[in-house]
Length: 562
Image (cartoon, rainbow, N blue to C red; front, side, top):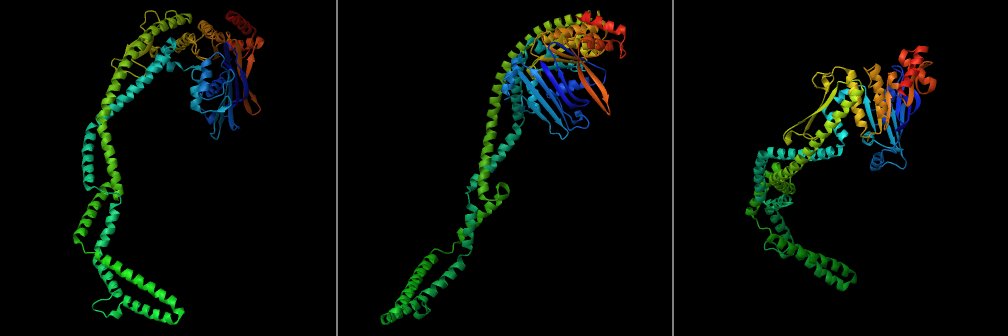
């Protein structure tokens, strides 16, 4: 149950701390007093949309806090643990701060949380029944969900929904693969041509760079030979030169003379050694030049082969990459893509087998779920019909029509069932879908009857009714109050109402009052008991001016409710 609601700087509420009790909690007050703000505050605690428009004028942030007693709903303790929140006590504290800057904050038991987590955490904690909720009651999905809730079929329905989602995803994947079969065939042919072309080229990593260097050497062969030969002639003796002209001959002569000089003067010995080393290096250089010249014969055939190979590589650049390294990488990618395309057919076959197996299970589970729903629908309809009779719709008959969608391909995640709520409101009339009912009061009573029946199944912490008694009055309103009291027997109920016949059944009565203080309007929530409660009922019965008669009527109404 919701024990305490604290509101600060929300719309016209400066600060309010609202205590709620077990049983039926009634909030009453003049139109525009701020009752809807209380609903808005509770909605924020459940993960509702936060807007800066909610913040009271002249302030920067609005704060809403709620304390829930979770002792009788152990599933919430488990859910808190699952989301990683503290759950040592039987309390759930939710604090929501809305700031004008847009930096909103959510705390759950003192720990920060996101809106998404808050919504998942609070799902099923409060059942909010608004005065316009009958619009959602017209939706087929909502009607089917109510049937499942009444019959305790939520777990089976969720399991089916998950399996159906898997089946649908696999079916879509298979169909997409099959539809692209022709394109894959064309792509496979093109890949085969490219792979064959690249493999025939037998490219190597770095080959283009190596061939480029070799081409430069081959093209410069004649010039290199001429230069090397002229150097060799300068170093060695040649037939067209005298022996004394070559560098080696001159160095030999100098070395001989330095040896003679060294014999006369020891100081010349080091010079002789230097010239000797120069002579040895010159002779080594001459030998190396001879080998170099021998290895550089002109080879026009090799040059032509290198140029042809480079031309082939150049022709591949636009298609396969700027370098042979990239081309080799392209070949690897083409092989991988070709393999993937080749596996597509196997993938289709594998998907087909999985889809068929899933379909068999879905058909069995879907039919079992449908049969269970039909049994539940009969009991559900009978229970709602009984509630309607208590709500002064004695001739009403509520029914749930169940139809099948046919083939599995036509099913949805909710199963094979097409569920529709229909009602006969007057004797002799045909049963019609809810959307065909003209009276808002009848829809309000129908919604209350459905909620009354659902509440017996448990699982909900708090039922919040926001003026669902709109369009109802007199003796029917009294019956609505009785039904709300009945729902409150095993559930906490918070109800906003303008009807004294409903308010008379309250276990805990709160009045939302708006006053003007200086230049500001202030709303406060006041607990009522004794004479104050009688006066509030008298106001609801006869208007703002309290009279002896209206007070007597209020006392009588309280006595009747009791």
